[in-house]
Length: 112
Image (cartoon, rainbow, N blue to C red; front, side, top):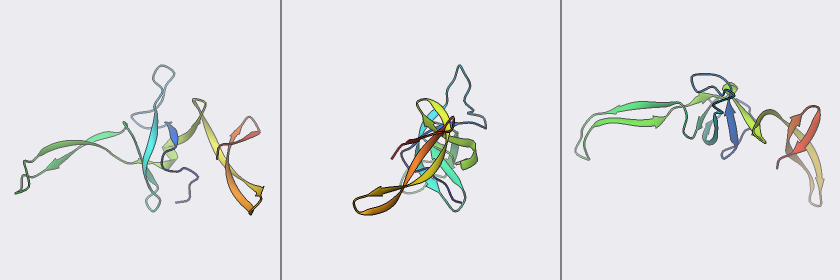
């Protein structure tokens, strides 16, 4: 799935059990992106348990870990507000390259 988000971006969760509200802003950092499945892992959110059987290497039990969230349920965070991302072509000394921009009230603000 095509996305303009990158690993390390600050995002706000806009849907699901960890949805952001006025009193509880759900802002975290992307730690992993699975582009084939269209999912991201956000640090500190959507936690669940993985059950592990005991084996020769160690003891079994329940391990709490962060589970993937669909890309459509997160938005890029620009100054604490969720914004859409766009792409613009920028001229440099080495030629033309793509630059991500935050689209805010019709204005375009470069973030890269």
